Length: 438
View 1 (tube, rainbow, N blue to C red):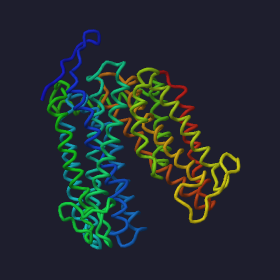
View 2: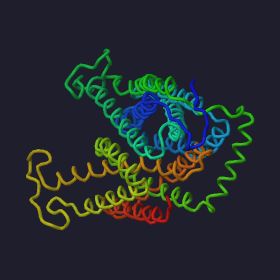
View 3: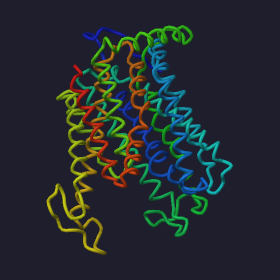
View 4: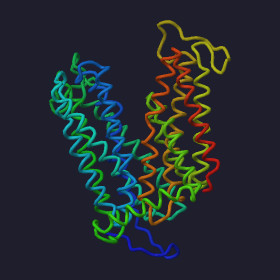
């Protein structure tokens, strides 16, 4: 593996285009895990066909997600600190990438109506989740060595956009060519599944695990071949003690580093809101263009302004959504949908589509600019450690948003009342962000 020689900023040299493009393809390599496994295909399949009933299936999947999230939240800062002390990033990406590959591949065993495989299946899911999240932490930590500071935003946004495209293409591949309806035997494109995948045993849904693993191995390989790593500083045994000492210092220092503390708290709050919002689906594809454009704006305007603008757009979209009824938008009367009419013929239906795209377009820049702002705020010699803290704030309270939405919706019997909670998340995130000095 090639390494980057350390130097002062004024004399620093950066690797060529091949190294940067290869790094960007990590997002492409990892995104199908979130698209295929956790969101659109395998998770719904598990709840609907593997578990005894959808309610218990959703609960079991939620428990496994929570367990993996807790492990990620607790260990990310520790491992990041150790990685900073040891210097290297690629060995950590390789190790945790292997967990992703092993866990995802094992999901093939999840045949329908076989409750005996559920414990092993959930363990495989938790292992894969831990692997992909930790690999992402150390991949993010490589960013400052790849491009000058004034191009970090573009790099981050391009990475996010590339990841979105990879996720969408993997979803099209599965739904269009591999996963078929058990009754018709045909895929979404009306085709017979490739490779003789049996619709009755939901082989097309189960193949998402091995496909995710193979996709990751193929597309992460260029990063290992062409993207240089940090030079090794000291053996892991020595780095362990030093990394834990530095972590203790960092955990004690946020009160002194007020902007960093405020940003991490703001990230925790608005990420909860974004996770809750994205859980409603239908807004994924718009993030591709938004993330790419947001990266360019990040370099031109600064990541704090991009995050602020994204939060304002999300707030606007949520407020408008709360005013949309079948016969009015923003309290202005519109023609209601025609009974048995074509899909999305009504003004309110079209408004939901536009607002969903707006949310997707703002969500990409928000996430991309957040990791850029972290790079600008974090000490350069502790970048992986602070990406660990960044992962911690993104995970440790991620259950609160969906929990509040569910509780308020149940208490009021109103979906809009539940969604209104998100306004508070984004307003509070904006207030905290305003006090961050970038």
